[in-house]
Length: 128
Image (tube, rainbow, N blue to C red; front, side, top):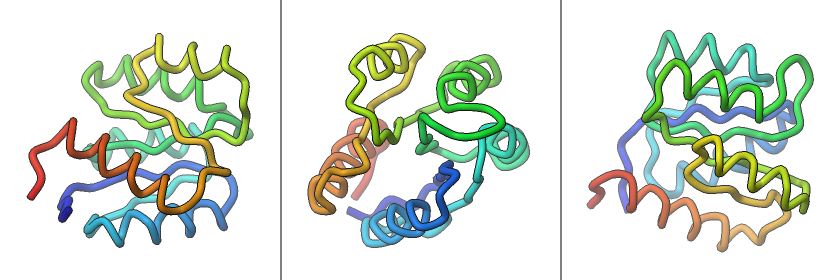
C-alpha cells in the first residue's frame, strides 16, 4: 500500500507516537503530524485538515473521547482511529457510537497494527 495522505497522530506518550509513526511510514504515509493532547490535536486539525486521526483515549488536558466529540463537531466526516491501552469495552463502544472509524489496542502485535491500519485506510480511501 502507498497511502499518500496526512495523518495526525495524537498520544501523550512520545514513544507511542514514534512507534506508530514508524508503522505508518512503512505503509507509505509521507506526512505525519503529532500532538501530545486533545487540545493540541484540535488546533492542528483545524489548521492542517489531515486525512485521518489516530487518537489515544487516555490523555491529560483533553481525553480522546472529548477530543473525538470536538473533531466530529468540526468535521462530521473526519476519520478517527482510536488508540487504547484499555480493554474497557464501554469506552470502545462509546468511541464507535461517537463516530470513530475503528480502534486499535496499543498492545497489539506490530504486524496486526499494520494490517488493521491498512484495512481501515483501504476502506476509507482509494489506495494503490
